Image (cartoon, rainbow, N blue to C red):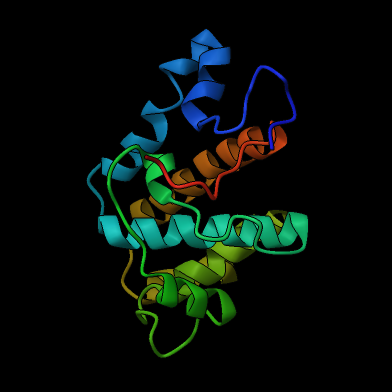
Length: 167
């Protein structure tokens, strides 16, 4: 339920951005660019990382997974899906055998980035590099999470239902 009367039931993220004309066209470009730019990470890996961050965000700030089946396509503006059972397993244990071994240290980093970013140390990123990822990939992950760290509170603090699947 929206917290503002100017956002009726069924308001979408695009409606919120229209409230601030300077952001209407600017913000949607950022996540799409982060999601689409060339990277060692695939679109599916980025989608899993984004969904994992969104879940970690809601758990750490609201004490539960208020985002539920958050449609990542709402964030990136393109059709992409996340295997919900894999996401649930990763949230429960990012080092689960069903989670790609190379992604495990990235997910552990993302969780700490979301919950305790002020405590990040070199030892939190070394396992990422040990799995063969580059510094550019780590930067891609940081940009992806930073874009979400702006997007999620804007929507949630306006009372926008992010569990609602687009049309």
